[in-house]
Image (tube, rainbow, N blue to C red; front, side, top):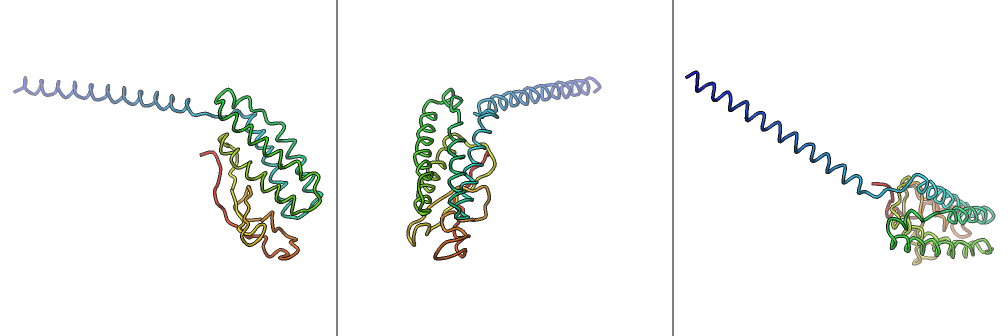
Length: 205
């Protein structure tokens, strides 16, 4: 009887040792796998993200000037936005993915092509049309590069240029502050300042 108990006891010890060994082995394997997955995730450098943040801060200031319908401020903030866009260095993207680099380059070229006329225009509606096109190219740029900054909202006004002519813009707040109808609209005054809705958001997930 004692011999039987000794055998059973020995089997229990061997089973426990086997279980602990394989559990530890699997756990360490999963940890290694997790590290490999994390390493495979593409991240931008702090310097690159700061340049993007500077560009977006300039864009938000430009958007706010449109909300205020201040043409002098619009021109000043647009010039700053163009300067911040010029300072972007896409070499980091080129090293990671040449097709992504080419797409981003095209977006930036289109952004600048639509921003520069704002500096010469006097009609705020013309400025707003160009701002709309800047926004339409900036939004896909952020999607293309994998934006990693503070949360942004893609917002829409269904009647920005008339009852059936919508337009979009980016904002750093979910509150709608409409840059197309704004605070001093000749027809609506400030009644349409909050006209619009959030369509999407962009942030590091």
